[in-house]
Length: 194
Image (cartoon, rainbow, N blue to C red; front, side):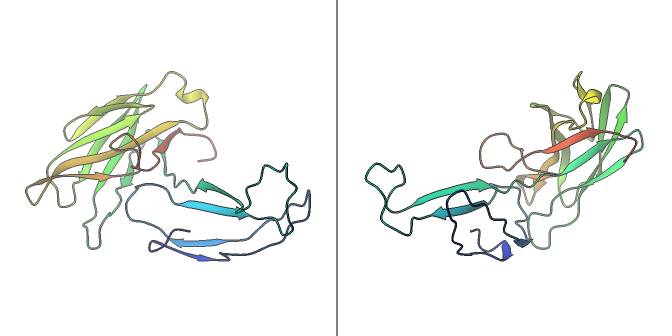
């Protein structure tokens, strides 16, 4: 199980299952990594108590199954400006934020506070399309956006310079694209219940 960034209660645990039996486990996770890097894995190791028949598919050492615990942030495409607080990826890192406001068939992102970055400009990915801007960035919403309560994959951040080196502050994972940068968040339409 992940170490360092997370504290867990209820794990590890050994349970015995009979054939066709199901069990539910209560587990608490506290903490979390500051960075939206690779998501932690939750693993379950299955072992047989008695000798297995010769034709079994289960290896003698057991079977380890794992699944990622995906951390996902959600933003609402509201005509009223909403603040998106960027992740503080290091101890003592200054707060940074972006505002998001719906403008008809699009959304406008604006740097509200760049934290300690100089020469900050916006970067965002919506529905798999990454775009860059200056202090503001207008993104066109996908055609299906208002019909899907789940919204679209979305993330944003500020690219700039810190201590003479390029640096990226992110609202969620998914920036830069590719493996190992965490899961992007979601941008959802306003609904009557929000």
